[in-house]
Image (cartoon, rainbow, N blue to C red; front, side, top):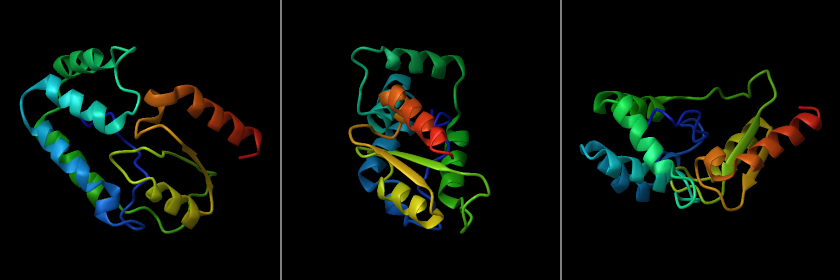
Length: 154
């Protein structure tokens, strides 16, 4: 269910809860409590992707994964609580960091990524049309951003 979504850039130290998880996403998250796997995975896909499922069949794959390796409600709740309580360090990590975000993220406000990059004085790239799951929406863009960042001497 939620185990795919790690490494959110909306961090409690820098942003209020309503930016780290947009209020308009809350009703969709309630569908994750129900027992209908297809409805759960469709809600996750809508929250995390702007590309949708038309050409990829990703929804069917996610449903199959959830059926084969189910994430319990208890574990999903633990993940949400951990994400809500996590506090990032005030100063940036010792290693270089590249922050990526999707401008059309329906789950986390992209301003969280901007604020994190600004506070940590690190690189930031925002995809103009992607949602929360950048590799799903545009994997080639993610690869180009990392390649260019490394080539620039990250």
